[in-house]
Amino acid sequence: MTIDRRTFVASMGAVMAASSIAGLARAAQVRKVGLQLYTVREIFQSDPVATLEKVAGIGYREVEFGGGNYDKMDHALLRRTMDRLQLSAPSLHVSYDVLLTKFSDAVKMAKTLGADTIVMPWLPPELRTDTGFGGVVENVNRFAKQAREAGLGLAYHNHDFEFTTRFGGTSLYDRLVAGTDPSLVKLELDLYWAVHAGEDAGKLITRLGNRLYAFHVKDMRADKKMTAVGTGTIDSRGCSSCPAHRASAISMSRMTKHRPPICRISPPASGICARCASDLPLQGIYPWHPPTSSTRSSSARGSAAGSPQRN
Image (cartoon, rainbow, N blue to C red; front, side, top):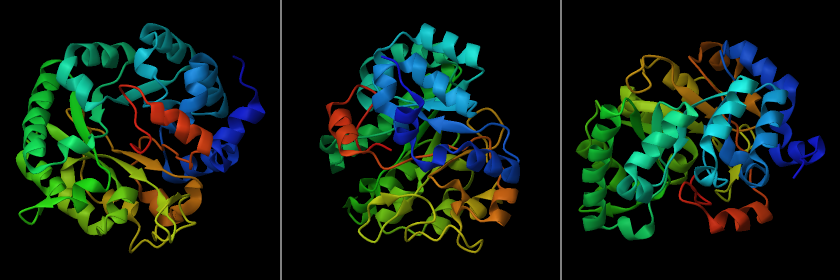
C-alpha cells in the first residue's frame, strides 16, 4: 500500500508541520526529534516501510515502537529501513504477557531494532487485583534483572488505574515503586494519565526523581479526554507548574546509559513555554494526537505489543 502525503499528514495532525518541530528542536537544543509510532499505528501496520520513510522525510530522527503489530513484522527489515533513513529506536513497548512467556523473543526483537530499553506498557484488568498485582511486582523485578543480564533496561509505563486502584490504602503505583528495585526498574511517566487519576504531576515528578526514564506529556480536556498540549486543563505553559520544567532540574539517566530523559510532548509542541523549552534536557520529543474512531476500533483488535489505551 502506498501512503500519500495527504493521508499521512492527516493522520499525524497539526504537529507534523515541519516548522513547528524544527522550532521547538532549536529552542530546546534537542539532539533528535522523535515520534512515538503508536501515533501512526494504523498506517504503520499497513505499510511500515513507507511510514518510516514519511517520518524521516518530515525530519524525525528517532522513534519508539508501540502498536501497529510491529512485533509481528520483519524486524531485520525495519532495522535496515531505519539505518537507511538514519532513524534510531532507543525503546519499544512490549506486553506483560510476552515478557512473561517469550522474554528471549523480546530481547531479540529489541536488539534487532537497536533499542536499549524495553517498556512494559499495559496491564490487563485481571492483574489489577491485590494478589494479581503482587505477582506483577515480583515479575517486573525479574524482568528487569533478565533485561540487565541481556544488556538492556526495563521501564514501566503507567495509566490512571495504578493510582486509582488501592488495597489497604496503598495505590498500585506506590506498591510498584516501593516493591521494585530502583537500580533496575525505571518509570516511563505518563503525565496525562497521572493527572487524570487526580495526581499532582509536579509533586509526582519530584517524588520519583531519578527513577524516571521518560515522560508522556499530553493535555486533558474538561471531560478528561486527551487533547493537544496547551489546549486543555493541564497548565504546561507557566514555568511554575510546567511538569517538564520541574523535571529539567532533576538528574536522570536512561537506565544504565547516562543521558537525558526522553520527553514525549503532544501537539502542538509549542504548549511548553519558551523558558522551559530552553531548559529542557531533552533527547527526543514524541508527539501524540487523538486517534480517530477508525483507529480506535482497529487498535482494539490489538497485538502482543499493543492496547488502545496504552499510550
